[in-house]
Structures are given as C-alpha cells and as structure tokens.
Image (tube, rainbow, N blue to C red; front, top):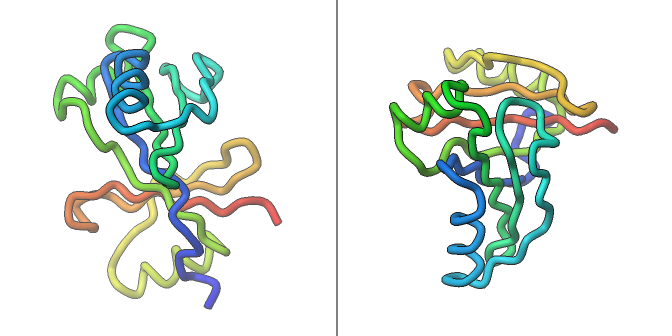
Length: 135
C-alpha cells in the first residue's frame, strides 16, 4: 500500500538556543552531531541534527526576534515540535487520510521533497510531518 508510513525520519525539537541544546543532549545522553546547518535552513531559524540512540533529532532555534518559531516557543515553550515520517506517495497518503476525515495541510516542496502536515488537532496533539522523497 503506497499510503503507509515507510519509516520514522526524525523528531523535530524547537529550542530557544541551539548550542545549549546540542551540548546538553551530547553530554547527558551521548548524542552525536550529524550536521550543524546553522542558518542554512528554509525558514528563519538555525538547525542541527543529532543521532540519539539511532533516532534523528532535528533541533531548530529562532535566529530572528519575532519570527514564527520565536512566537511558537513563546506560546508553546520548548520541546517536541513535530514528528516526521517518510511516505512512499504523499498523494496516496493524503487520499487515504481523507477517507478518515483528516486533511493534509501546508503542502510544499522542500529540497526536492514533497512535504505535508497533519494538524495536531487530528493526531492527538502531535504535528505529523509527511515527507515523500524523490524516487
């Protein structure tokens, strides 16, 4: 079935400052830095990924006061922002979710990937990111 989840890609974590989060997870849990993207991200934030026990955690921190991410942290605090899953076909996944009354929102293309989201109100408070990678 081309609408099923292929695998967990990453857990996205919003933090006020990137360096203290990376230092904490490295020192406390032995997380290994995969990539420090700095500001080379899509959006007004800095980012870095770490391997934490075989799971990828993608940390994002606002780099502009008043940015969308900064406002999000003000409202919701630091913590898990979303969980990203790879899907075979975003179109098929979207159609399958629609049969359950669930909409895929904010569809876009990022670095050749098709990306969409399931709103937390439809997923027990979890923002789910669905990613179809190029074939």
